[in-house]
Length: 152
Image 1 (spheres, rainbow, N blue to C red):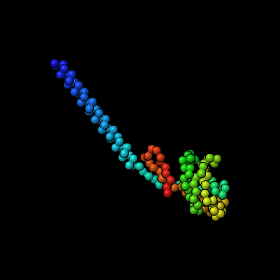
Image 2 (tube, rainbow, N blue to C red):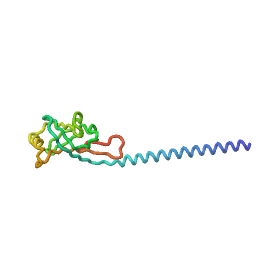
Image 3 (cartoon, rainbow, N blue to C red):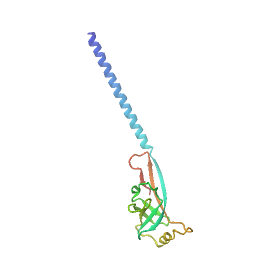
Image 4 (tube, rainbow, N blue to C red):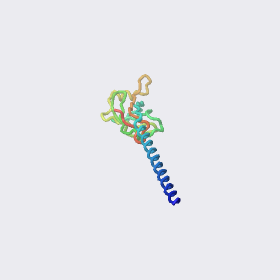
């Protein structure tokens, strides 16, 4: 009889300890979910503006640009991002393939204006300010999947 009573008490204590362990695990999981939820709410959005220069004209709609990215930057991430020239034309980053390191092609769908062509041709002259390329985008910090987005 004494043995049966001891066994019952042991079973009851082990049941209580299992219940306690399950409760602790549930609390830890809830705390972890709360932290990830707080982290998702604390995503920081940075508006980034990068500047580069037009190197030369390739054809009526395509320009070769430089100095917008560091040489080790993967330019493929920025393909199809909109850019604006300092002269007002709008375009997008077309590709970096077939270009020297650090340079990339910009497509201007409406074509390059004659004034812009003249400015680009005179880039070697120090008295004239070179044509600039402006890239605007959003960069998200503390986010694991997509961390770049085109700014409007």
